[in-house]
Structure formats: C-alpha cells, structure tokens
Image (cartoon, rainbow over all chains, first blue to last red; front, side):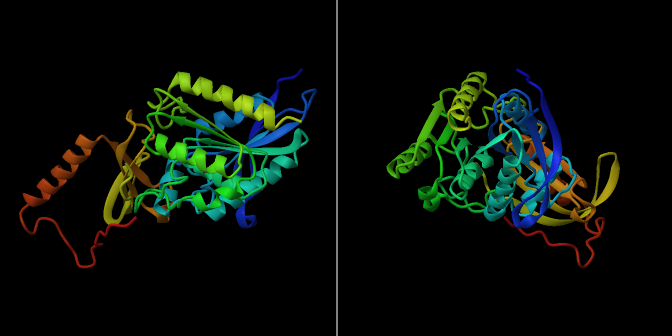
Length: 249
Length: 98
C-alpha cells in the first residue's frame, strides 16, 4: 500500500467567498481507502511551521488535511509571527469569519478524490476553542479541542483575543468531541474542563476528555518549552484512535 | 495571565530585518513567545502597518527584563535636561487600548 503524500499551499474560498490561503496535505490517490478530511485550526501564533507539520502528519496517517491561514486577509504573504502580531493589533479573528473559513476548508476537502465525505476539525490553544465553535456551527463528523481556552469562561477584559464564551452554543454541538488537556493548565483550568464535560454530557453529547498529568498549556508544541513528550505521544495516539473511529468509512 | 493588549501610537524609527523604518504603532502584551525560552513573556511589537506586517521590531522579554527596560527609559527621560528632546505639537498621545 502506498504511503505517498502531497503537501502544498492552495487557495480556497473562505468566509464571504474571500480568497484565502491554505496549506493542504493529502494522501496521493492509490490503493489506500478514502478517508475523512481534517481541518487543522492553527494556534494564535499563526500559520507556522509546526502547524504545517501537524497537517502533513494527518496526511501521512491517511487523512486529507487542510490548515486555512486565518490571517490571510490582514497579512497576505507575511511571516507567521508578523501576521499574528498584525492580527492581534486588529483585535483577532472574529468568530463568524472563523466559521466561514473552516466551512470553506470543509468544502475544499470534500471535493478531493481521496475524501470519503466525512470531516473533522482539530485546533490548538485558541484554535481549540475555535474547533468547538466550528463543531457547534457546522455539520461535522468529529472535532478535537486541544487545550482551548475560553470555551466556557469569558476572557478577562482586554485579553489578546476578542472572544466570548461558547456556553450558549454547546447544545448545537454536531459531532463527538475529543478533548485533550493538561492538568497544570490554567486556561483552561481543570475545573473549567470538568464543567465543560459535565455540560456536554448532560446535553446528551458524546465527549471523550483526557487530562494529562505533568502537562500544562501547549504540550503538543515540539518547538516550545511547554512540550511534554508523554502527553504529546499519548495525545497523538488518542487522536489517531478517535479519527479511526469517526473518519474512516 | 492575559492582561490587556495595550495599543499606542508612536513616532520614531526602528531597525529590523536589516533596514530602518518609521514606527507608528506599538502593541504591548503578555502571551506565549515565538522565540524566547519561556512559557510567557512581555511582548512589544513596534510596527508600521502602512508598510505591511513585516515592518515590525519584536521584543519578547522576561518580567525582570521588561521592568528594567521600562525603568531605564523612564529614568533616562527624567534625567534629560529640559529642551534637549524635541516634543513638537501634534506628537501622538499614547492611550491604552485593548
């Protein structure tokens, strides 16, 4: 069975039919079965090397994956850190625009020959909250929240992102949700994670939450001091198992 | 952990990416750094949005460094004799934003 993948920058129609940049990694059509797509939502520091690496990893696992550049509009062609600084000064990514950009990526993935029509989102840090937001706004087959802050708690006044609690939207969650969190994280705190799990379970939603001891925020980031190898390795295994159950035909 | 992002206008110049550019805006905030080996840093972006996102000088400082730098700037201003630094009419007035 071939394991070839192809990864490249593409253009897709995002929110409001805006032309936005995205990074697409997909299995090369061959003898592997078609599988669901994965929309990778980058963290606040932007559309960077490590997020593109994550996107390629999903393709290597057999899933076509796409990471839309959420800062395309403010900073086309800029380095990821410069783009993130510009987006921050502009007040961050509006929720409505995020949902539209993810919807554009969902549509683009669905058109691929290697897609079976299913789709999931996964996001990290601010993208974790945005993954939940997308799953409460779009019909998806699975969603993963990696330590998303401010899913329940409103951020302090003047926080770096202009976001609000998703508490009122949770009843609209359209798919099973995998949550991966660090026991030492404060945003989200273990208490907020426990409340989120209780709320979703009480609403009849399917949730699988895992909190890793010895890990804080950002434990999946291999290029940051927050990286925790045990949590990241186990977390990747949980993601692979979850997508295996929800994205394969 | 996430105090307000403070936005303020500036007038001056910065060197970044090998060349000088006029700076017109600054962002000051606490968040995860891109490069510094800490979980959180005080970050300062000196920018000129009119020249594009790459016209940016970025600082990521630990708390003690940020405080020392701020105090050094204030102390330098306090000990500069009157009249040395031009303060022309129309100089931007910094205001905290979010």
